[in-house]
Length: 137
View 1: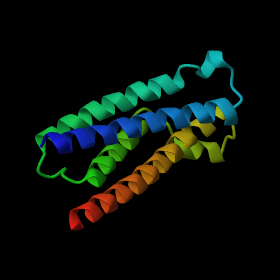
View 2 (view 1 turned 135 degrees about the horizontal axis):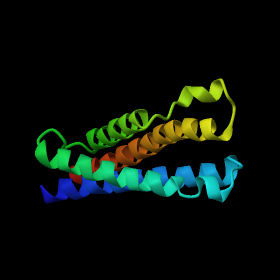
View 3 (view 1 turned 60 degrees about the vertical axis):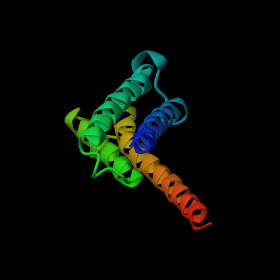
View 4 (view 1 turned 90 degrees about the horizontal axis):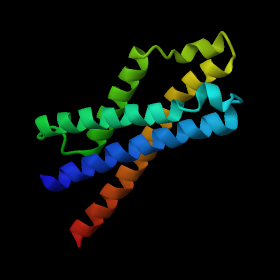
């Protein structure tokens, strides 16, 4: 059981770090905003992701029988992240009506979350194939 908890923790931490890094990338290179107005936004996203990781890890511990798969853990993180984004009032569709930097950043938060999920999905797929190949030998 310790091993699966550690693997789930790695998935949560990796998704948190990737969301943080992609939000910093968007703010630094794509959005032309001053550091005064959006400087702390990536760190708030990182704190949000760490809170989601904590909630997700508690969920995995409570329902440990259902979260033996790392893909389910990644899906849990993605659902919690999107739920928190929706609750916080970020609307990704406003960018198509008002093309300003704030709406672009809100849209990029959603796009980044799907990119992070795709990266984690690929890593989990490669990892499972490596483990499967080792178990056959």
